[in-house]
Length: 106
Image 1 (cartoon, rainbow, N blue to C red):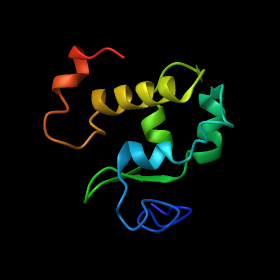
Image 2: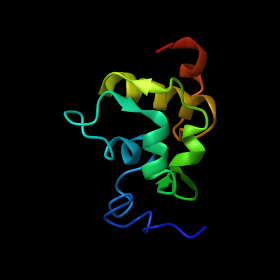
Image 3: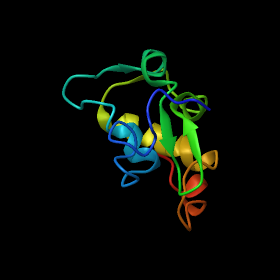
């Protein structure tokens, strides 16, 4: 896929130093962006790459197909919803992530 910027560059994963959820979180300003509308966020950042691990890059839009609700009141609610969607849909790359899918309702 042609990305609007290099997923491993400064606009993406900062030279592969940031992966997954961290890449998404840095697109949000905790002080300025809330309440945050999911669809507006996807409209602005949907085509941006998110490196999940050393091999796999997906778009913000692909991850957000699984994110609920439609609006987030604060940064914590946003983080919980994105994390839950990533764990439940195999976008979370670390050993043991599956133990949190059903056991830890956010």
